[in-house]
Length: 279
Image (cartoon, rainbow, N blue to C red; front, top):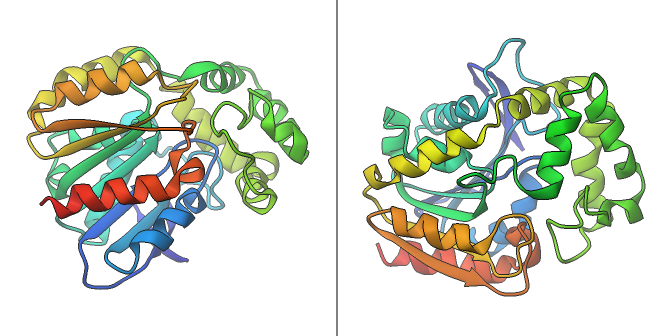
């Protein structure tokens, strides 16, 4: 792991290096960059694969006091990351959160670094915060100490399969060592919880509806990949989303929940490879 200093704070990230096309993999709340471990293993021989751990609650380095970690602030942070590493011609792959889409449609110089966009079962339209687990932590963030209380079931590996934990997000049991890693900051770091709380307090459906209205301005190739069995992000949203982009296409992956990199990493890796190879 490496670190990089950004205006919002210090990010951990991994970088496979190499001379291949650059693929940046971005995750959502309550997981870290290890979500992408299998996809990295599949792609790293042909691509430079860069994976930031974003401040969504499972990060070890809390952001600076006062950092803008609203959904738009997270998008700017991701853009700052691309600029700090001087990454260009990027294929940006986003799972779960809408961060990558918000950056892509922002019209900022950092958005110009994105050559292709892959949206893999993300928050969209009025599904923000998404589904039962998203709304549960959103409500918990409104109550003092609510996130700390909501995280307590994560102490026990069997309870991580509950619908309010990772049960609706993945059709398979997340390996204990990975779930331990995702859970530790939520359980033990007040700073990590505060960063997640800041993000959740800014979660409003109208923001994603505006982003959808702006999708027509992103004129580069977009692949919308959706989990066919998703119980948090409706597949109908994926099809609608793909139709909004001038160069949008849609692909469903069977037998997967929202966390496609966890449930079907080989299928997702193959889809990314095919998409990038088309140029």
